[in-house]
Every structure is written in structure tokens, then in C-alpha cells.
Length: 77
Image (cartoon, rainbow, N blue to C red):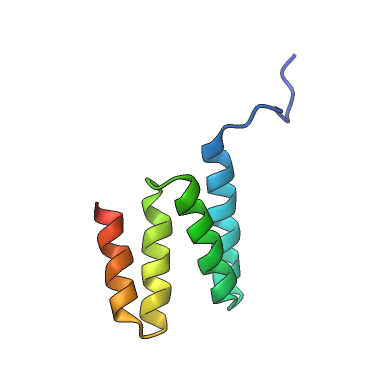
């Protein structure tokens, strides 16, 4: 019998859940919380491109074009 909840969850599942949580923070206007959570995702998984792009977007919103460019370039690398 297969259970609905599997106690063995891979790391990418946590990254996805945290990404969705950070995006909800964004939608609520909690930009620092969102940014910090995106950064945590990047620390765990440097290949998570969407987290770099969301930080870049938030930096543009804050008129911090230097930081936006840094994160956008990091997503490309």
C-alpha cells in the first residue's frame, strides 16, 4: 500500500516548497522575507535559477540595478 505522505522527501522538494513560500511573501509585500528565503534556497541549491531571478526582480523593484544585474548574471552562470 502506498501512503499519501512519504517520509523520504528529496532536497529539491524543500527548495520548491520554500520557493513557493517566498513567492507568497512577495505577493504579501514582505520583500525582505522573500529575499532572505530566496537566498537560503540558493545556499542549499546554487543551481536554482528561479531564486536568482526573483531576487533580481525584487532588486529592480527597489531601484537597486547593480544588485539586480549581479543576480541576473549569476542565474546565467
